[in-house]
Image (cartoon, rainbow, N blue to C red; front, top):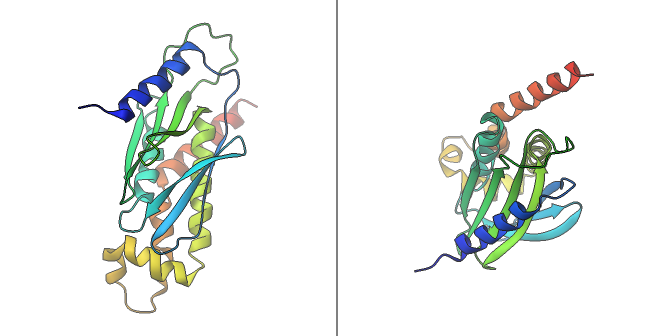
Length: 209
């Protein structure tokens, strides 16, 4: 028995252990509009499209992504955060691992940094790996999730399709025509923990000005 993910993961960490990049990467995620229950989620590294995974409305992937950010934001650089998303026909592994105990620091590295990676079981390989400033990563990914959820709350066809399939329990409790259904998805994505972290970091930056 072997694990291709484990082998590829080891190779990835070995690459970064031998040399950390001189500059942090920026990560953005975008979402294509869902079609027949499938929603491509695209990853951009420094503005370049690095590929996508396809989410399924059968399995809720957005809550695990929110929880991943919450783990990073609340652990104070003490925990890695790894999620295994069931995309119905295959899996995708999203991982954020803090970089601890690096040697030869010249003072230019951020206080908190980590390796973000995306493994696509369909490709049997990582479609993305990046060296990130932790605070910037949390802010950027959370902003992408919230922006998408806010836009989708304005689209009845999305609410009546994706939201009904992914969050059927909450949907079933609402009367027909109840506008609260429009905000089920947004409420699942929003995080008090992440927003508290962002406010804390804003105050910290202001105190250093």
